[in-house]
Image (cartoon, rainbow, N blue to C red; front, side, top):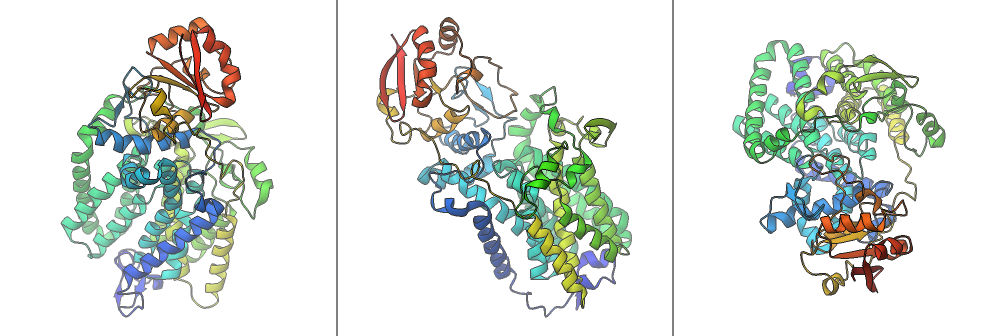
Length: 567
């Protein structure tokens, strides 16, 4: 028999970390890991996909109550298209034409875009977007499973731990944001550290794998890359404090992680991080989402199956997005009661508490009023962390919860096994989201004009075309569907407008809002070099008088749109 390194480092008396060399899972690691991934993927399909898994090319799996899915479909097509055409993917003139727009602070998620390019090319951006949606919880759960199994060497306990990360409320709230839902590199980094500490990874293998994983994380989300650096550092500091005789090995591993960062920096610093720092926004964006009320920990912003609507109604009374839930809190209390005497357990609970504290934001809100400043007010002064939304830091607390669940179940003995299993099952059940249609599982409303290629006969390649839709941001996915055949004077890149000139007219060219006058619209069209206008049929009646006043006439109605040109 041998001790797992983490147990030896923290408490050699921890029965949960005692691993028998003849364990039935030993030697079958790849098979069990594959089995765990299949289970998580099936769960993701059942919970999130439903009947839409057979209609990935015509329906959105994610909720459609924001314009972000249209942007991510555009980004997933733009990045590989730009690379294939010898363009810089971080600068574009296909939107907001004719002015070049920097996309350094835009959530492009270039890594997933490149990885999914064969699927996008063969089946379209909607299929790629939906596939990523289903993969995100499965990959996150699988990565957390690898970490938990390395710590406990228990399959079912680790499988439960992975569920609490991959199917956490953080992932659920970010399902329409692949740059955040694809958080699987975070537990993978911790898994590599554990492997290095126990001696199962050689030094340079560890360094290279850390560097590759960091680059992967950067390619998904600059925000997660920055916050992982900070909270990974906090975790290592806590480990160093409790390590005692193993502190030299932890210091050595920390230095090796630094070398991994150097490798990652060599890959991304010059082409991306340096421009990001040089063009960093001067002001904090979305300031209204940066602080939370502590009671939000108990009451959800979205509806869950078992808890029903009444808790959601309570959650609407409190500011924030840091819901954890009664089930997980019960698990943490049980873990604290049974494992508090162990140093590693206390350290883990302290880390979770620190993450929750930072997730509360820069200011403590109580009863709808701002009270005292919190530690996050210090982090928000750092360049790459200035724009990070604090509530998203809860992802690191959920990773800690995954480890708590796995180690707590693995350490159970006698009748305590069923008590702990019962508490964990209740916590899992309370976390099952209620998929409401709408806004989930909505059909794609792209006019046939774009996917059937009709645009090629009425629009010249490279022409600047104003596309007027029913909903803002829809033209982003339509332009991607047309493989960037035309440029647009308008666009949508999310709330990060750094590098984009604010244009009051742009926001009025969709839906049924207040229209610009004919003269104002004509001036705007001339300034952007617009030579054609495509209007979705459902809003044609609203925009027709303004288009005629601007000197444009109808050319043809086809495929759910009408094409207009100067007369």
